[in-house]
Amino acid sequence: MIPTCIQCGDTYPAARHNLGYATCLDCGDRAARQVRFTVMPAYSKGAYQLVSRADIAHTNPKGTHS
Ligand SMILES: [Zn+2]
Image (cartoon, rainbow, N blue to C red; front, side, top):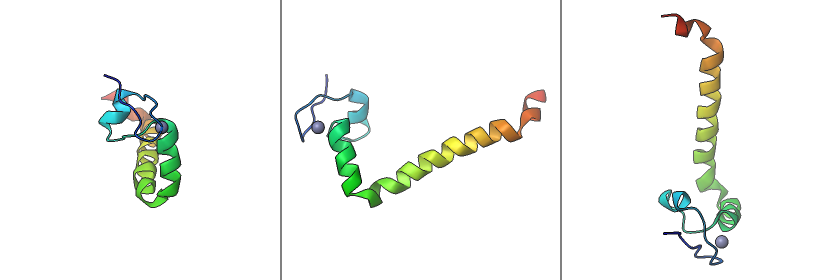
């Protein structure tokens, strides 16, 4: 089952639909720019997790020594 964008009628990945999106990437991106405030926290949180994970790998070389 391939979900269809409610904005333009294009199909988009089911994984995106599972995240709660009802639009394709293009329309979702456009909407994200319009409602920056609701998107920003989730976005920076994801970026923060990526950074801290890389940080752990870098600062804990002895961690694999147990
Ligand atoms: Zn669309």
